[in-house]
Image (cartoon, rainbow, N blue to C red; front, side, top):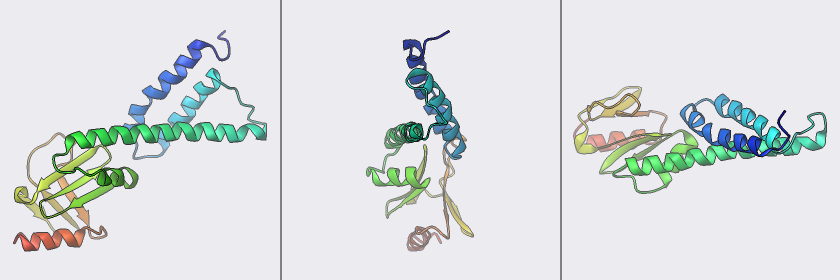
Length: 179
């Protein structure tokens, strides 16, 4: 039987914490995946460092604090990967702001006179106005350059009428004579 707090258990905790970052990033759209991973890793934490007594109220602040720290770790690692991935992937987006907004809100648009970009968590698509080959107006404004991409990558910018950038994009399209 393994001794409580053994070195092997501690290694398992840290290994599991880092190994579960990738699935949490991959399935981050649903909050249940980080929560399940948190409780799974928390189980290894209790084997490695501390066994709480769930019937004692004084242990609950530490239980909640530990789970919150694990979730914060996932969130920080996710942002770090998202930031590095999108910064390398983008030719035009040099500011950190849109990437941070995309991470917190799930989606962010960058619209200016040179290009339009849609940034989602771990996905990005940007196109210069000259490269827009097709667009569709309706409930959603869809712009694309008609280049075939891998299914995991975005190939079009989609802006709904509820988005604040919708009117700006329509105005730029009208100025360029595309609309």
